[in-house]
Amino acid sequence: MRVALVTGGATGIGAATVCALAADNFNVALHYSNSEDKAIKLADKLKSNGAKVGIFHADLTQKGSTEDLVKNVTNNLGAIDILVNNAGLMSDEGIIKMSDELWDEAINLNLSVAFKLIRATTNQMVLNKWGRIINVSSQVALTGSANHAHYAAAKAGLLGLTYSAAKEFGASGVTVNAVLPGRIETNMISKRSKGRIDEWLRQTPLGRLGKPDEVASLIAFLASEKASYLTGAAINVNGGLVMG
Image (cartoon, rainbow, N blue to C red; front, top):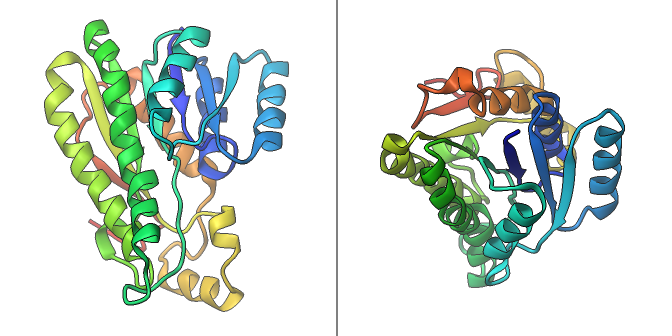
């Protein structure tokens, strides 16, 4: 049974992805940073239905934490076959007032952590001649976003990392793809004003917010054998808000 690591797996898209991969009979490592109660509740629910799920805490912004997480998952569940880089952080701040610390924090968690986890997991994937890496980017990687330059830059960098890793590891049977969610019903979006959300809905051809399950189902497909000839792709999941 293959092992999948999902970072930021306790809430939102991450939690939906944990459920989708567990339903596809993967052993799932649910990583969390702050949402311990939600992680435990989700894991217990899935285990009660026969799924094999382990929960793993790590502050991925700390030095050495990515390597420690990979070792912990490997020791408890086995070598990681599927890596879903979902953990991320978005805050509001304009460029002029943005501190170095805020910029560095966004680049670290949204981009550098993904690189470090890819570096820590791909050696075993290459040896096994099989692996799946799915990076959760964002539509703002393509469009930019006022007051979110740090987040948009990191998510755009994640696309460059995706393309480069896809070329580097393709011959070894490791596929690397990215999904670009738009406005999805998560805590990150629910904090926005009703007026802002209504504006997004008017701009979206499908006229609604997306659901975490709709992103998770794509991630599960990319993790499957059915996606074995798909690599280096960046796939929009945004209801038509951004096309191409």
